[in-house]
Image 1 (tube, protein in one colour):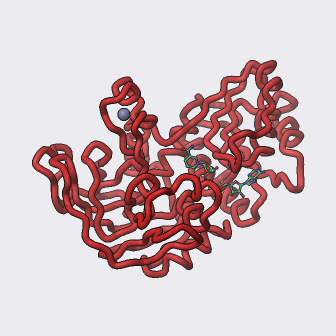
Image 2 (cartoon, rainbow, N blue to C red):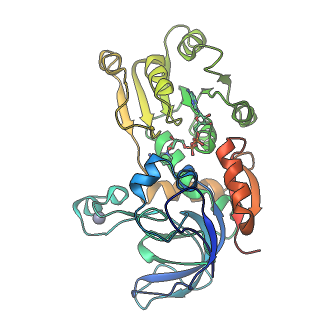
Length: 346
Ligand code: NAD
Ligand code: ZN
C-alpha cells in the first residue's frame, strides 16, 4: 500500500510502497482510508523542528492522524463497527485500564499513544486501529468535513469549556482551529466575537466566517481595542488558539475580572512569560485543553455536522491528490490556507 512516512530524521516526508497492515488483535479494525487532513503537528514533523526531533523516535513511521475511512475487516471481538461503516477516530489511543481512563479522562490516559507520533499514523491506503477509538458517523456528513473532525473536536472542547451565551468572546489566532472556533462560538450563543490574527489570509478567513471584529496585533493594541468595544469592561471569555506568548498575555489582560480563559495553544518553549498576577487579581478561571473529551466532543461534532448547523466550507480551503502531498505541506506551512485535505482514494 502507499503511505506517507518519515523514513529518517531530517526535513521532509516520503511517499513509499509499504506492506499492507493487518489485524493484530481481536479488537482491531482494518480501515480503507478515503481522505486525510494535514495538522500543524504533521507540518512540524515534515519540517523537523525541535519538537519533532525530541518527540519522534521510530523510523520509518507512517505520519498523520486526521482521517475518514470505511471499515473493511473487523477482529472477532469487535462489536461497535462492521464492514461498510464510515468511521473517524480520535488520534489519542488510550489503554482503557489506567486511573485516567477509569475516571472518564481517556484523552489524558497514562499510557497514551498518539497516531503518527508514537505509532504508525493514517496517511496510508489502509490503517488498522483499535475499536476503542473509532466512531461510526452518518453517511450524510460530507467526507472532506468528516476528515477534519479531530481538530474540530479541539475547537469544540476549548470553546465549550466556558458558557458563551450572550458573552463577548476574544479568540486569539484564526488558524484552522481558531476559524472552527468562530463557528462554534456563534452556535454556542456568543453575542460578539473578536478575533486577533496577524496574517492577511486568515484575517479574511475570520471575517468571512462572521467574526464581528478582527484585530491585527501588528497594527493595533488588542487590549485597547477590546476595552473600547466593551466600554472598558473587558471580554467575558478568551480562547487562546495561536500558541503565541504575546497573544496569550494580551488575552489575559483583555479579560474582565471573573472572566474565563480557555487555552489550547502549544508554545515553542515550555517555559513562557505569563501575566499570573493579573490573572490572580482578576479572579480568572483558566482552563487548559488537550485533545478532545472522549467522546462528548465527538458527539457534538457529529450532531452539528449531521444536522447541518456547522458549515466548514470556508475552513476546509484546499484538496490535493495524495501523491501531491509535498505541495500541500508547503502551502500549509505558508499559512495561506485553512484546513488542507488529501484524497487518498479517488
Ligand atoms: P496554526 O498555527 O495554524 O494557527 C495559529 C494562528 O495564530 C495562525 O493563523 C497565526 O497567524 C496566528 N497568530 C500568530 N501570532 C499571533 C498573535 N500574536 N496574535 C494572534 N494570532 C497569532 O494552528 P492551529 O492548527 O489552528 O492550532 C491552534 C493552536 O492549537 C496551535 O498552537 C496548536 O499547536 C494548538 N493545538 C493544541 C492542541 C492540544 O491538544 N492542546 C491540539 C491541536 C492544536
Ligand atoms: Zn489509560
